[in-house]
Image (tube, one colour):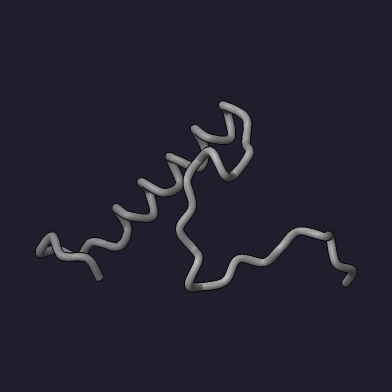
Length: 50
């Protein structure tokens, strides 16, 4: 597999803002929905994060 020239994010620097992602408006909406879906899936029955 060839390198695409895109830097790989380090686990320590995994947090980013939407502005630094350089996405269009539709992609921002998709990313926002994925993040909220991911957060909702990581909550157990007692309301605590897993």
